[in-house]
Image 1 (tube, rainbow, N blue to C red):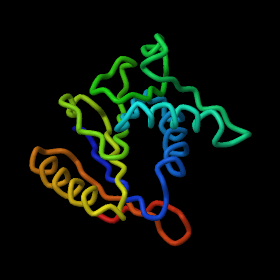
Image 2 (image 1 turned 90 degrees about the vertical axis):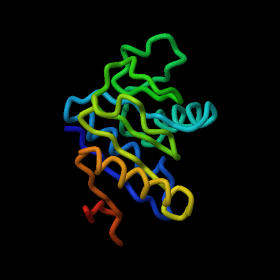
Image 3 (image 1 turned 30 degrees about the vertical axis):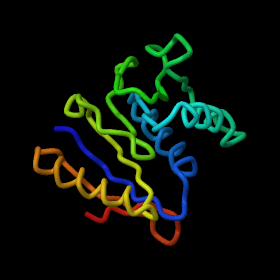
Image 4 (image 1 turned 180 degrees about the vertical axis):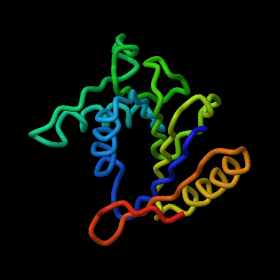
Length: 150
């Protein structure tokens, strides 16, 4: 059964949270697709993942570089899975893929300060729970650690 994790971002952009979650995914041996909402975000996130920390290397690429199948972390705007990922991150209101049930885990990152994004997350939560997905809700505590809330 696919796990569906909802990450409620408050006062933090996805770029501040995503690298550590991707690192944890790779540590577990998972392959990852990160789906964003625009080509500009693909480029911005690609650049950020090369420079977010001096003492770390996060192997990744985009679906435009011709080596999509080889990347352990792939950034895209499309609803596809060319690197055979078993985990998918949906960032900035990226749409749920048609093949959602084929993943081990899907992480929905939404901006809790954006009322439309919050409403969409609630609708998706209800729909996917009714479809039998294992859904959980995560929110940052005052120390910056993720806490399971539901």
